[in-house]
Image 1: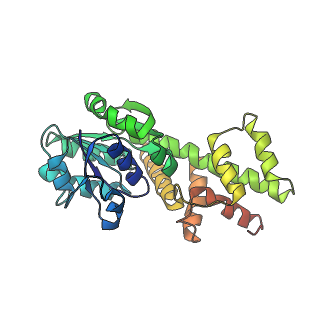
Image 2: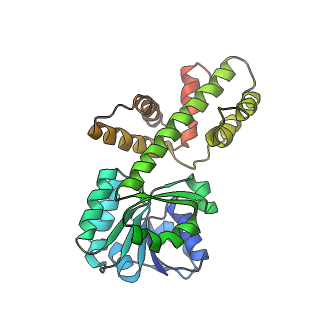
Image 3: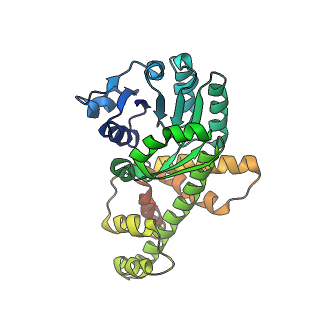
Length: 292
């Protein structure tokens, strides 16, 4: 299949590489030329803009930072809508507001282009190992066409519902992830402040109802002080902003999400925005009067 890929950052680059390894012919565009270095000698076609990607591909996958970037790629000058033919499918794995996904989908539908909102969970490790979780909203037939590509990049693929439903599922995911990350950080800080071995505490918790993948994976990295970014704190801040904005539009109270959003705001404000989101434990420790 001729596959376009736009956005070759922390997540997009390994996702596209996995599609290339599966034998798909890639048509690539990135705003930063250095993002294309990983594809040198791979046979991938390098395009001048998103419009050229859309001319060459049967399916275009997008993985960029936020809704304005998706809108520019899809609807702006030199964008997909400029040259995309009827029947083209665009699958967006960025994390954006559900309302934005619906709006972009409606605009593309006017040109006969199907739009799937297909955000992912799993971080850089999941993108590299092709174990991502895809949460997809949009037309069921378009989803079935793209499913074989999702299966080359992930291991859990769910068609959640109509346009925007994928982004709703991702917002739900980020509520659980952020609150759990904060809970693990607080638990390990409580143990440390109490003079108890955090590794032993984590080991005990893993055997009970407190078990979670975040406690298992991120808790270990917190104890090891391993801050290599897999999902940066500023990205978590952005995703929680989407959650709270959407909740405001729904007239919905999300007190836990609101509280943890303040912690990630503080992370970014205190210079920790480029670190992994699990570095929230540093902020909790500072509040507890514990140094590095």
